[in-house]
Amino acid sequence: MRVALTVFFALDGFVFAGWVVRIPAIKEQTGASAAQLGLALLAVSAGAVVTMTLTGRLCTRFGSVPVTVACGVLLPLSVALPPLTGSVLVLGLVLLIFGAAYGGISVAMNSAAVDLVRALRRPVMPSFHAAFSLGGMLGSGLGGLVAGRLSPTPHLLGITVLGLAVTAAATPTLLRHGASLRPRASVDAAATPSPATTPDDAKANADANAPAEHGGSGAGGRRMDRRTRGLVLVFGLIALCTAYGEGAIADWGPLHLEQDLHAHPGVAAAAYSCFAFAMTIGRFSGTTLLERLGRTRTVVGGGATACAGMLLGALAPSTGLALAGFAVTGLGLANIFPVAIERAGALAGPGGVAAASTLGYGGMLVGPPLIGFMADWYSLPTALTSVALLAGVAAVIGFATRRTEGTDRAEITERTKGTERV
Image (cartoon, rainbow, N blue to C red; front, side, top):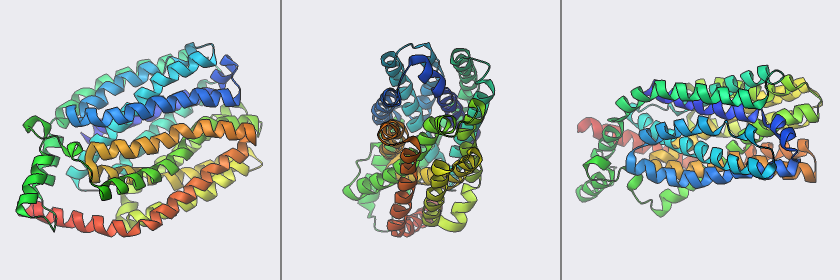
């Protein structure tokens, strides 16, 4: 189950990176200005945000795994559409479809990952996002190799074919092992009362957490109380601050190197590749880092590192220093987003994942259009410094919510003891 789900995370990153490295070519193809391109990219945001809200409900009703598979088919199909456009308006319409598929698979596979993390009782969420980063690195690396040889149309069509093949190969394993995952995780959670839970409360919690096929609505079917909703929104805000940087580097990093530092298109495509490689390394070590340092230190240290790295990446006078800055930014941001999404999902199931993901991936998708507007008003390097600012904000929020980490640890310990007694 873990391997099959990891494949879907990698596929998501690979397809997304394949699209972003061809943005300069598609910008030239459609004759779009920076502001017009920003508006077209806003369509990705709109499609994703609407779909994320809907996907949380679909995961609650049908299960996260089937929804992940369905979106795993739609995403590679939609990535072939942008190079077929000849105007900014049509580009915006097809990016709306691409954004819907991207938002759907993001929520669905993260919801499935939260269920698996709960079943394993280890902080392995960064490893899934490491696969996303690895897929992004491979996708951008391939894009850099073919950028000077192939037009966007055959390149992205090849990604479509490969993506559908990967989905077909991983789906049987995911469906087979995922069928029993949510029932087991839900029963464990329902059978384990919290320290202040009465027998009547425990029965109510069990009813709320019961698997959908047994008459309950699942974890995602619970209504979030005010405190839980507030914490989910806080974690979503942390995710937004960090995902904003990932979206900005993905969409505008290559253009910054090519336009402002006069790098070769192949070298410019390496901007996201360097970022994704560093993020992949950081996420592969994320489980060990979280077990040793805890969530608060990981978030605060990562935000501060990303802030310094992005200032270098945006303001460096040479291509080499800018690439180094993007790499440092990737290391800093690596584990912040997975921690935020995992904590939101642990609190509120698919509904929590959907809420935090809507904010988080909304930052990834809304960030590029905002960068475009700021680039027109000021300059692209100045606009990219906003990534450093929001990384610092994530660190501050992580420090401000440090006391909730101790509460979470106490609850996890108590639940584990309760499950052992059962």
